[in-house]
Image 1 (cartoon, rainbow, N blue to C red):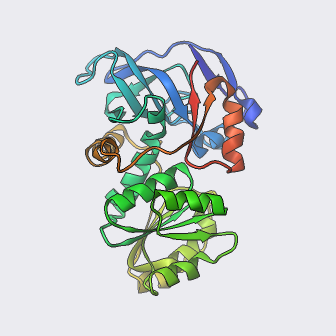
Image 2: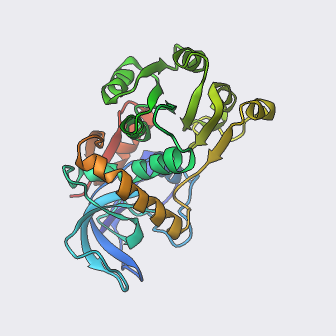
Length: 326
């Protein structure tokens, strides 16, 4: 098969489409013939040499894919060769084939195309696990989403609205904010021109956000705590704004607030399977009913993954950038 390899860390040109050995599904795994993968910022970090795959994972980038089951490994039940699926991966999605633990498979949702389904596993699992399983967003509460036009952000808006929450988003351009509004965002904040702390305070009559989904990390830590409501929950899922910040514990105590920080890639298989099962139970019916949809910015041939990385690094996209196999 062909896959994207990274012979040496570097810029987008470090991604090489070359022939490699086919993967073989092990115990409890299936072999998926990939129709499409998707670009995540973790892939960019891996390409740069900053985020190696966990032990035992594929060395190739790619944290999600869609495709058809080509073979079943020992001990796999409930799936058949030819089934159309999408999958959460620890790596290997930038390839024509990938071996996937069966617990990380999802059927392609009704009403979603096979290629477009590649946009779903990482965002649905990240949003559902952080916003709902950990932060317990409830109907009537307010969710603040940083980077509302990202793949994560576009899904967070839709899922929060589907459960009856109010959604506040930040984004860097008026066009991105317009797209967030189309998905249901209630309050739009241009972070280049507005202070999100003041805007959240205004939008909630001084109460603050009950849940904040944050991809920035250190840069926003202090202001996120300021923006939290009493009993608020801050869910950190990224560190685009740095890894070390100063935390005012007094401010956190005064609000009886909580901070969580998670990633998906290195979690044990059992934890990933539990998240995938929860997503299938709660999110897949919303997709089938048309209440939630994948947001795809563009599709690029997988062999030209370098171009896709440039698009994501320039942050001009809305939703997901997909890589389509030949």
